[in-house]
Length: 114
Length: 114
Image (tube, rainbow over the protein chains, first blue to last red):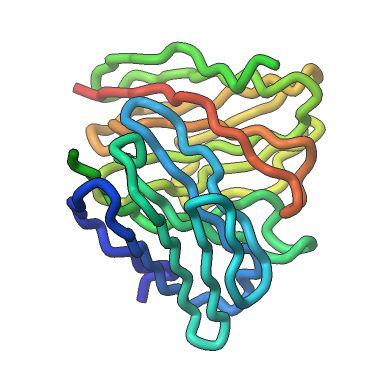
């Protein structure tokens, strides 16, 4: 069983739609949960970061974590063409475990159309 | 502030050759991690360096090696290249190896092995 499962898409939505991106994980040692966005020919950039179950909001983006179900989600409201990118979920162990090692999902390719 | 820089950006090699990739972290960052990104496997952790010491290593063969210099710049080397080594190699830097420190990715080096 893979440590992280992520629907690869591609996902195509109209501008203004609400987008839901999801990942499941199996490693209980993961304590930090992240979403990265990667544009074509660029490195990933951190979008959202959280370490507790529940919701965290930042502008049009909401990250949701359910540790009991080992499930994380990213919601994008009022999606824009500039949101077209690959979204990667990422996980990290605790402060004393794994250092900076990130375990990534395979990424979901999102296209927001006009 | 300048971001993470990686050189070269593109590289073409043939099977059996070796290659060295370079990463210059953000000024003041002392932790550098390397990742391999392929369409099939996604982003996979290679290794992490802090203060010139390898702190963590991913599940890659010994042909993959790295080092970090006193100025925090890092290099990774792949010897006896195989076709399957074709990938985007990404470097990420952070202040130190702790989950609370955001990792910033460079644009990557695209390696093609013929």
